[in-house]
Image (tube, rainbow, N blue to C red; front, side, top):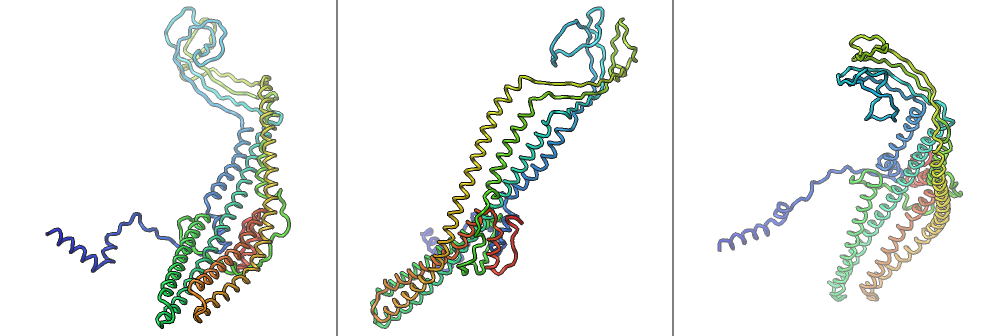
Amino acid sequence: MKSTIIFLSAISLLISFPGQAFAESSIRLRPEIQLNETSLTLSGAVQLAESKYPQILKQQAELRAAKRNVTLQKVKEYNPAALLSYQQVDATHNRLTQTLFGTAVLPTTPGPGPENVRFGADAFSAAGFIIDWAPIDFGLHKARINYSKAEMHLASAHYDLTVLDVTVQAAASFLDALIMKEQVAVAIANVQRFADFSRVVHAQVDAGLKAGADASLADSQLANAKNDLIRARLNYELALAELAFRVGIGGSNVEINPGGISKLTQPDDPQRDSPRFTNHPLTIAKQSVVNLRQANRKILEKEYYPKFRWIGGINLRGTTFKTNNGDVPAPGVSGIFPTVPNWNVGLVIDFPFFEIIRIQAEKKVVDEQINSAQQSYALAVQQLKTEDVQARARVRASLELAANMPIQVQAASQAAQQAQARYEAGLATVAQVAEANQILADSRVKEAVTNVGVWKALLANAAVHGNLRPFLGAANQATGSSTINKTGTE
């Protein structure tokens, strides 16, 4: 009985304060994120992507590293090898006259040994430096430096290609968001039309001129229009989130400022001329790969030459070991501080003649890599030519569709007005009016998609040219802005 009273009391509290009870019982799965809203034009979105998108910043860092690597390679090629060393060793000096290959396990024991084998330790010391320089190598140094330069040019080409891809994606995301924004406006107008028609139907039903089923059907159509509006707003919010990601501020709240882009249905094509495919960032990147492979082959061609090395240095030796064979007198501390000097200068010529087998085999591998890179370049050119034909076809079709859409919308609008007038005169049904209004809504959505589709077609054409600057100039004119983004060549 007591538990029943508690349960009824809880129910009465929920009924008395439903909003408060729900607010207090709701659980937040994650903290709210405070977002700063940013209004973007088409050019502004592209410019923001160019300065903020992580992939571009990553390529910038790689390009800087490649430029510094050229300097590093020059240092590696022409900087002499130098070593300063000091040793102090306690060891025995028993030795035999013999010949062995050098190894760390068997240290060399220069000079004569004692007359008898003994295990008393003597002190040995040595210090000195040596410089090893190979300035003459028949072009191998230059070939390796040119290879690092080819890597830098490849990194630069990848950076330009990344900028183009990122900015095109940012512009495309802006236009997608604009389409969703236009669909929201159409959905709002559609809800208003169905709301007005619902009031007319209810007035007719209240006056006894129409059956009550008409009011229910009109309310159903109004509810469906509101659902379409909810879905349109959802798609718009999702498109804005995608746009924020594409411009490098993912998770931020952005809004678009389209200006007159969706109203200008016949903009001048800023890139009517055929593109120069050899100047496109994609083909430049592919050609850079070919150049890199060829630079690698040049290194192989320069490797089968003798290597001239000039070596020189000074060393000091010291020991406490004495024999009866005329050792140079040295103080007792020479086991720690070497005192007997020597200098040496020499020329060493190394010629690994069996390397020809490895070099010839590696050349065959590199030749196939060059062939592969050349075919990849040819494929890129064909791809761009194909995309150019497709882009021009899309531009023509989108302009024709944009010119024809007002006729379709006007006809659908007249049909919707006539259907409602016929209903009010008792000559049409609610379903016919709803169908006419839905056709009008669909026509206006298609009109919005088609109008923005003109700009999407121009964007695809600009991407084939590899330069967005003329496209952004046309977009700025449509939005009333005179700021031209630097994307492309500036």
